[in-house]
Length: 338
Image (cartoon, rainbow, N blue to C red; front, top):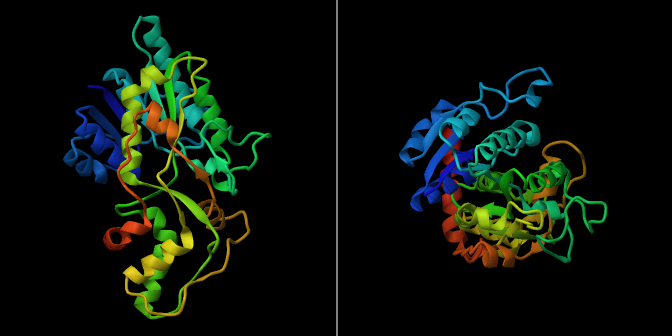
């Protein structure tokens, strides 16, 4: 039994991670920015910690200092948390999360106590878009990298390097899921929402997507189980200069065009063939999100399976769209009515 704090526990991936940690009989604490999510966490046997992850201050130097006002950081200290799972997607994560944890872990080490575990949730988009087969052993975001990550996540490789460099004071690992599907799947609103609305309005469907894109995918349950596997093997896979605890997590490589077409049919679309107009250029939003979504990554998860003992159970997205389409629709309607 391990005490785990999940940063972003009320989120799409964070809630599934928290649920599976509880199923494995771990004690789970979870952060949420809003008190409205407290009941959701409590119903899932997660101890809620309400408050910001980062200091809420206009003072640019405030993130350089540990803050006693951050509830999650105080909880790590007061409750003697063993492992922190970071799903915050914070660009300031080195200063606001990693460095404060290193300081706390140093204090523990000084008292002959185990160091803190830290699992960073990253993503396979960091490999960049290309037709070659990649691997989690291939450096990302480096000058020598064959492809560069899309603009949306271009900041992550440096943060990953900082995480890997913390081995003297933290048991640190990195889990990189591919594009996640299943459940309410909010990330798929990008394409599924306009498809649904076109069906409602009986209009043709045109989407800004690469008609040739083959994307790597993983179900949200399998994503969560990878984090649980990392928690349970963290001390054995990390904490050494020679260790490389970075794991790509993916189960299928599928045609985006086929997924979108099949999704539309599952929702009753009977119009002309869906038109995919390509990925737009631009450095704003939603352009950079569309660019990232269409990242063509082909990588396996052999190391996650052999080193972590990860055992995914879902076969793929398209094959189960008769279920996943309706699950997304239920989530979309719930979000729309909130």
